[in-house]
Image (cartoon, rainbow, N blue to C red):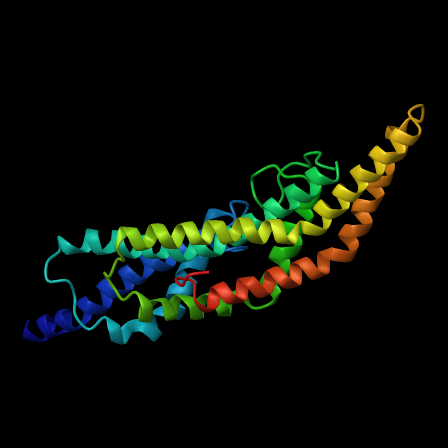
Length: 258
């Protein structure tokens, strides 16, 4: 019995530590691009969460040297860890939303905003948005997202250790800055289409002013569609490369200010 008591004293910090790590990792994995998409079966997502936990736990286990003094502390610690994980996941998921928004802005600007149904995400998006999101997710996955995400989860414990929740005002400032950065990023990626649409409408207005009898819609509609497709073929590699670099920046410091 004495040996069993000693074994329990040794294993309790490890068990509670694994549970707390699982709470943080589970919240991150639920929002992680590619791995946390709703089109992925739930069993696969659970397996991904357990796999990340198995990777992260050995690296952070020295931080969990003491178990909670009472069982009543565990629920609050689990909630805090889940909230920290949500902060990390939201900072990364906002970049996927920025790519979706960039596709929607580009489609609306160039009059090709017909809904093509759900793609990688359950939200209906124009064809341009679906193309950019699918290509972006494929690019970020082949670029080693699983390794970068695991390193980001491990690094998060040096910024916010177990049970340390930042102040609400700091979280509000951090969240507002990340949302503003996502909108700015989306507009920046869609800027070529906005500029082309502006130039197209000015030219179309000048032609209509010069020749009121000309049916400019029959000329302008095919021209803007063809121009948008051609511009998408030219700019998509640049947009996705820039977006992937932004993902890497956020993964290096997911809890930092953008």
